[in-house]
Length: 476
Image (cartoon, rainbow, N blue to C red; front, top):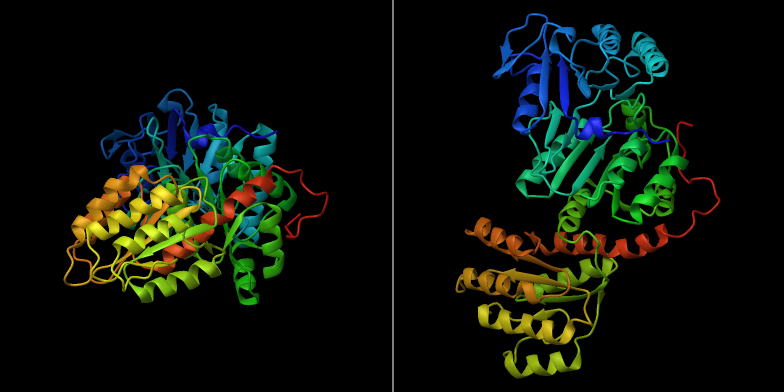
């Protein structure tokens, strides 16, 4: 039976054992991030010295903090944690998020501590996240929550990341704020003494506000249970996985990091297919998937139109699209005829379209309008490219394209290349209109290819699970 994980994502009240007024301490960082997340519930910071931290009164003990909170966050030294959990249990607590390490990953003493924690969990029917994790962030508008010592919060949105690496989670948050990405949930799994990737995947898969799930995995406890959970989620929303340890050196590193069981690259690919997950092979690919599915959570078809004003990038985009499994279909005859009557004779009326370097808003505009008129049942997506030469002001081009976006009935992506002094404003204008923007055509093509893989996987996920052993070896 699945455990209720609401206290870990949307608690009404939170206690922090080890809270501190020092910003550089783990307890101080967690308290600051909880407040920075605009968490609306009751916060009960616990510090034997009492006092206050960041405007919040600290209590000397849980007993002096009032009624038990929904969640107890633990950020004290490893040798103090078990006694703190026992005290919290006696005070009425049942849900624990333990951030420090010092358990199964920390030699003989750590393994003994881990065994004792497991015994406490079983004896008192506790639910425990961690230990040795960076925390959990969940930012829906109605109840934002961030119990973490990561350095920043993501922007918010429907994308969730479940990661077996705190550093990967940290980089995803940084990338989400740079790009930006609609990343709103971060789960750092840690040692998974009790709650593992499967538990979080099941919970977020059932949350209608979560539109796609990203995974960074090095090892699984129970591949069969994970496979069933992943297929159930993939039938409703995309699941994208980056699995570390696909090479022999990587497998050795993963074994040292998480105790991962070695699996071959072929086994990982086969397992991803069994789970109906989109496999990526780099963190860059994982973040590109976040970008695309943030705009188009149900993915897109494979038939694409490339609309460009430059030959070279059009060639590169065509190569990239083909490698990504996309189809550059011929233009509808009516569209080709219409464009030949309006475009300069030097322009290439084919797929990819080349409007020539001096194309301004009128040429971009009527070409996109022609695609809208003639291509809605012919193209599954439009990939736009705009190289910015010195003699053309790109601002009117962007304004024209953004104004036409509401009429585009298929996914529309756009890339801009060259020296882009106004790129922040141009990108913001297009993304506000609903168009994901890219700084090179290869990223755009790769992202489109990832989105085009989902419809077939979604269909496969709805089929019965084959009665076969998982391709991936786990710790069970």
